[in-house]
Image 1 (spheres, rainbow, N blue to C red):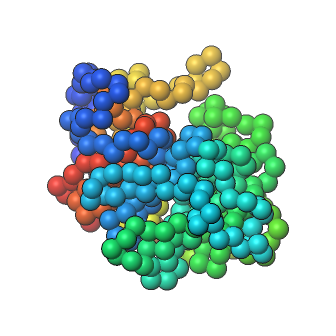
Image 2 (cartoon, helix red, strand yellow):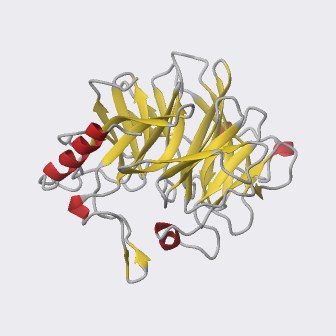
Length: 362
């Protein structure tokens, strides 16, 4: 669990800074907390390319696609542009005859798996033009050059199912979480009702299938265990991380509740399993998220954020960083550590945020 002192400090910090005056809405100038990398619309998820200064950011908006972020120069550029040299399809391993249309490419959750030195697979949840998991090859073998991205194929989601996050096992099996299945809504999971599920597709299988026992209130962030023995999925409506075994998902192995924030994405970042999300009880937003007139509020009010590390062995959550509402940044959904710098993604903002850390929890 997060230490009580840290929770108290988080509450005091968010209360004490709720009335910070806002600069101009179109400004990309630093705030009291953050510097910004602008031009990255709704960078909902982040992935670090290990051993390099590069980050990958998704873009949860039509045409926002993928951004390649140079953390040394602090710039972001559109990475996938649909050029002919960015496609190298594998017909036997794709449901799609053509790459995603860059004008429609709407990238949500992402997952990077290193396959060999300098080579990785990037899986991307795409809502633009099709509901699919797009598969890219990433070549980062040249330290003096930017990584190279090539589309290899896609795995279509079952009809009516909209993926949120994606992860994989070393044998190529792909997992995808669905936040709200047809007939359910965000309001349902805010009320604690079951809405989602985790779907799996192994190599050679023709389609994704729902894993029994994985239906939760708001299946969100997703990550596999280091030894491929199972996976972790965020139940957003409960603020929980729920662990499952790989070969029998009918009952969870365990679950843990994040006490003072709402975890969104969950990823391995080096040897750390990182959670990031918004503060649960935000005074400047009237407290916790509520259902008003039968509809869950849209989280438009700026909330504070928290980033934490989860140890799956002892199920202990250690707080890494937290902060109050920021006038230029809200909707924190992902985090990556680069040295002593913390990089934050958001499902709402038009930029990536970065702040320095003086201490990182062991």
